Structure formats: structure tokens, C-alpha cells
Length: 184
Ligand code: FES
Image 1 (cartoon, helix red, strand yellow):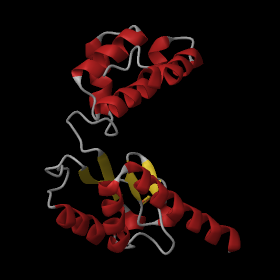
Image 2 (image 1 turned 60 degrees about the vertical axis):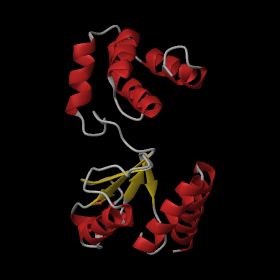
Image 3 (image 1 turned 180 degrees about the horizontal axis):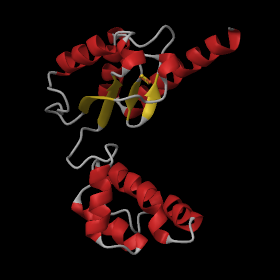
Image 4 (image 1 turned 120 degrees about the vertical axis):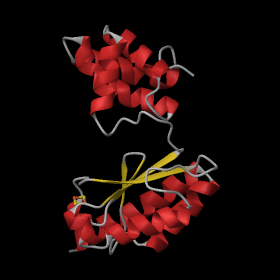
């Protein structure tokens, strides 16, 4: 489905466009919306963002190509990004990353055959105090004591069950982390 005329995104699109005196300034948040809808930044999404921002599609494509948070190829339903930068590496992120790829049976940056998961390593996600840090579809996933492969197996199983179960699990872990922070 398109993002233009899609009720799901209408309010957010209008908000982003209204934030800036020049529509072109909204190109990045709108590219996120296109990526959310299509799972990656494809030609349809680029054309729609170009139309919304009154820009040339080539210009939009070059912006999407410059930033690593936009994917130029199809991703799985869940895009898992493991930070392997210094603070996370010191807390076992490299092993976690390799075990995750092994568990999913994919290579770095690959997608599972069922189209459910894409996994890759990334640079600092700005959550170093809770290393090792992982993002699932751009949302932090954290757990008391730091994420382990046991957590990731649980996360994979929950996602395979359904999205609601996954979100509930992530929220539960986050609440536990917040509680621990408040108590310390
Ligand atoms: S080094 Fe991993 S979040 Fe900063």
C-alpha cells in the first residue's frame, strides 16, 4: 500500500510537513515512514516522498543512499541491529552477534528464508550504559544484567508467535530495567 492517502500515516505525514517552512526539510522523517510501510526504501516510497517534499526523486534517492538507517534492499519483518562498538564489544556483543546469526541461520546482513528476521551489526546506538545493545525495528531492546543469547532466543520465539507477544516481552524487559535503575 502507498503512504500517500494511507490513513495510518496521514497525521504523521502532515505533522512532519508542518514542522518546517520548507517541505524538503521533512525528507528524512518521511523516508522513515516509507521504510516502515514497504520494509525498505523502494522506488515507490522514494517517488511518494519526492512528491510530498516537492523534490526530485533522484535527490531523495541520494539522501536515502547516504544514511545507513535507510535500507536500499528488502528487510525481514524484524530488523535486528546488534551494536558491536567498543562499549558493547567489551560486554560480549561480538559473540552475541555471531550467535544470533547462527541461531537465525543467516550471514551478516541476511534475512531468514521466512522473511521474518534480518540481522546485522551496527556502530554505537547511544545506549552504551546498557550494553550490549540491540535494536529491533529501531527500538531499543534491553534487559536487566544485559542482553544474552537466552533473551534473543526468547525474543525470536515471541516474534514468531505474533507481534503483540513480542512487544509485550520487550516492554516487560524495559520495565524491569527501569525498576532496577530507580532502585539503584
Ligand atoms: S557502544 Fe554499543 S550502544 Fe554505544
